[in-house]
Image 1 (cartoon, rainbow, N blue to C red):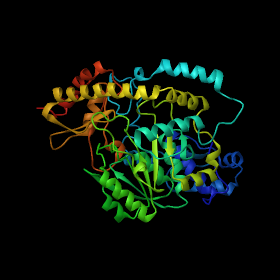
Image 2 (tube, rainbow, N blue to C red):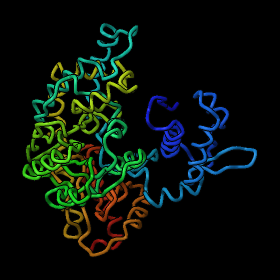
Image 3 (cartoon, rainbow, N blue to C red):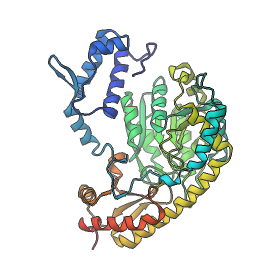
Image 4 (cartoon, rainbow, N blue to C red):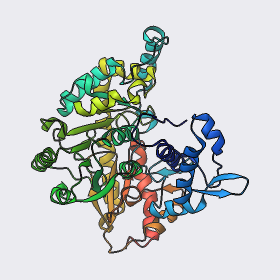
Length: 461
């Protein structure tokens, strides 16, 4: 089902076109048939002309093809061009194949989840505290927003009240909501390149003008951002994705000052802030900002579980006002039981204990991965990013590397590897040696097995 807003300034045929396009990218296969124009018009109470206009735009852009007396089908040409643009669309998602070793760079081992505690709290919540006769709060349950506000204040220096927090269905949901709300004020979006491809795709799908901004050893290049004249910028300042660079305080203050001067908006994705193993994270941009120029994004995916699909946003008051005026404010984005279980998990102190435990455990895994890389790959590779998150990034010391051959050889040996360029754009390329999904004792044997692939591609002496 697509959500269309008849009161929006965006015409209904454009809303429908954008919704179907996103659905095709996310859920369709080549040759899948779209609903007929008549059925869509009936289902959404639209005129036939509105639906025909949306389908015509999809056809013109190559997303679908028309077959005489049959209807519209997802075009193979579209999928071919999409794969050319993004050579491995699913490269950052674990695949169903049963690999012997999977170096997925954003995954925890299933044994790391506090299942016993979670089940106990869930059973308590569902039997005594859940009111299934009422509608959940659209902004998120108050008890969970209170718990998150307290945590963010103490751990990241975020300045917020419960009225500024929205519980979301994860990162993509957060970014889509901001892109939709900010469209009323802005039209020009910028982000770090290399950077996370999803944010780029979301804002592009909403029709924003796009400006890639390079990253150096100080993080986002602020002078280049100024020249771009972009009004919104998305950044990962704590642990830049994928290079691992941390933006120093001086540059954070310069960025804040610039965005203040133009009345712009910073989208701060506090990526990997809970999983820093050697240095304490620098306070958030949102906390350093004294005005209304930063939207702060976070999730529970990296430190607790990507499966529960819970994220959160701290929005400036003017953006919250737009949210409260939109239809999005009326619908809960995460199930009531999940919200209440997570709220209790935080309130009872289990979240703080879990963070300490998972940080210690993954620091050991990080050290084991680094040690195994040095032992088996030695001087044939350089470590270009480490010290936080769930992966170490490496590049070969040789001047050239056939990355596609390396992926193919690894695949033949039932080893799954991940390359930064597949999900980040730009010229930066490295292999992302994920360690979070392994047991501690498995890491060395996994790297040793991968060394055979490395050697077959002539990356070792």
